[in-house]
Structure formats: structure tokens, C-alpha cells
Image (cartoon, rainbow, N blue to C red):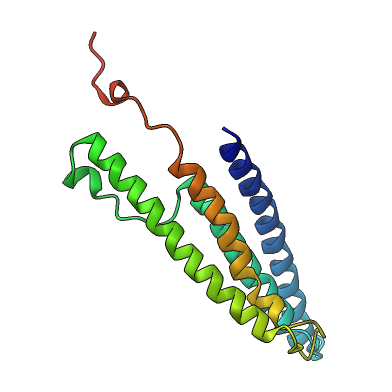
Length: 165
């Protein structure tokens, strides 16, 4: 399915982006700590740049967690609901509710990004809206991931039956 391939591609791009951003964050923090405590000369961007990288890596990293279904969950549904069809229906309803929440959250993030686009970060001289833009971008990509999961074919009922020898 084309939506699944798009979701996989977006998740892989997000994985690479988040990994590179985490590596950059480690380098930035190490450099800032070295400069501050060894050289006694803190860079002027010591707070703003790591924060920008952290926010983007966290939100984009959430895309990968959604695709891999690795967000923290209680995992008690199989113990409460034994019927596979009902669990699948609950899973589909969950995807719809998550998509609705992501639309609302992404829209709110877009409004905040627009409101702050003309405000400049003093140390980096870039728009403060660039920090807030991480939210609607990540929500948009995560919506694609959840739409792909919503429309994935259901597993066959025979996949859940015990194997007979």
C-alpha cells in the first residue's frame, strides 16, 4: 500500500534526523560544558541552540515511536478483552482518536509558531517560531503514520489460533 510505504519512508527519515540531532546535542552539550568549566567562557548560544535541537529531536523522534508502536503503553487490553476482533476494533478507534488529537495539537502548534515567527531568538538570530514549528511538523508526519496503521489489513483470525501437531 502506498500510504504504508510513505509512512515507512517518513519514519526512516525521522529516525535518521532524530539520531543526528541527538548526536549533535551530545556534541553541543559537551562543548558548552568544556567551555564553561574549563575555559571559563560560555558560548552566547549555550542555551538556545541545544534547546532548539532538543525540541526538534524529541518531536521528530516521536514519529519513529509511533511507527514502531514503541510508545509506553499499559498492555493490559489482551488481559481484559479476549476477542481478537474486539481488540482490533479498539485499536482502530484508538488510531482515530490519536489522529484527532494530533490534528488539534498540530493546529495549536501552528498558531503558536505563526504568532512567534516575528520574534527573534537573541543569541541565534533566528525566528522563535522555528522552535514551535517542530510541533505541527511532527504532528503532520505522525498523522500519516497513524493513517497508514489505521488502514493496514487486519491480521487473519487463524494467526491467533494455537498450532496443532
